[in-house]
Length: 177
Image (cartoon, rainbow, N blue to C red):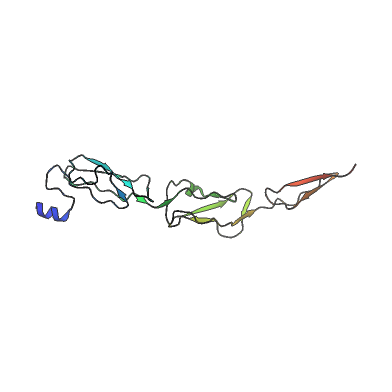
């Protein structure tokens, strides 16, 4: 039975109370000081770290434990490529759902809502995607400034404005006299 266990589990140790060498973990490595050890007693804990260009997925465990049955605990993949926070643009805000995320894996697309004072110029909201090189795609300018309507001239003056869109400035010129 011991021989069958050894064949089925390469991390099984023939010594009771020992887990043997560390398992390989995708996109991660153990600390240098324990990397080449062949023996770990029951209760040993080893915390892996993500390889360069990979980041830890929040809420995923990065530590394995040598269990009483002389096997290493299971460890879900916890490192992935990602982007930092999505780009901020004046004409749109990150959607509430995407703003609450704390990890943006490669391939994820975030959505934006038009900012106050802007309106959607199409039927599609702006998006940005985390690319393979861990950078964000450009956010298309699908939100345009809303019109405030033409300003009315005050009594005894004239409004001079180049446009009447959100954030435009106008000058009031008083009549002579």
